[in-house]
Length: 224
Image (cartoon, rainbow, N blue to C red; front, side):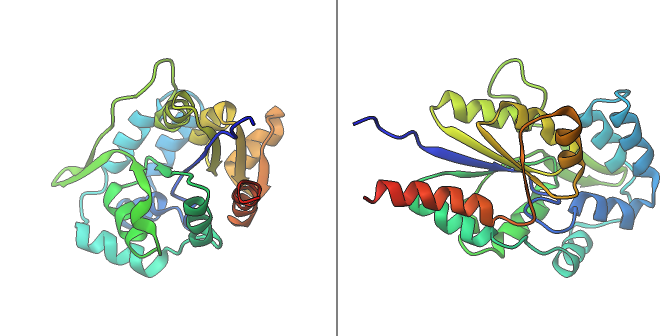
C-alpha cells in the first residue's frame, strides 16, 4: 500500500484568518494614511515588502501595546470555519502554520481566543514598540531562493515531505501560492484578483469550510 503523504496548512493571518486586516487597522488608527503610499511603492516594485513594512510601522509612534490589543479585541474577528479547520487538522495529523507579516503580539492575542489556537505554529516578525514607532525583526529564511517568509514556509514544509495547502489574501501571498500544492484565496481579495489575472490556479473561498472539507476527506480515507 502506498502511504498517503501528510498535509500541512499554511495560512496568512491578516484578512485571511481574520475578517479585518489588523495591520491596516493599526496603521490607519495610529498613523493616519501615511502607510498607503508605501504600499503603492511596494506594488510598483520600488520597495521590498519588508522595507515597505518598516517604513509603514515607523509612523506608529502614538500607540501602546495595550491600546493596539484593545483595538484588536474590539474590531477583529476570526473568519468562519477556522476553528473547525483546526479540529479537522488535528484529526488529519496536519500541522497548521500562520505565516504572516502581521504584528506577532496581535496574532498571539487572536490565537489565544480561538479554540485549539495554541496548537498553531506562528512564523512572523518580532515587533517592538519604541518611541520612534514599531520596529520589526524579520526571521531568517529556512530555505534558499525564496521571495519572502510565506513561500519560505511553504518550501520548508515541502522539504519535510508535506503536501502543502496555502490560504491567503494579499499580494505578498502570491509567491507562496505559486509553490504550494493547493492554494485558496479569499474572495474579492488582492490575491484572488492577481491569480485570476495571471492565470494561476487558486480556489476562491469566503470562509475556511472548503479547506476543512479537503482535510476531512483525507481523514475519512485514512479511517477506512
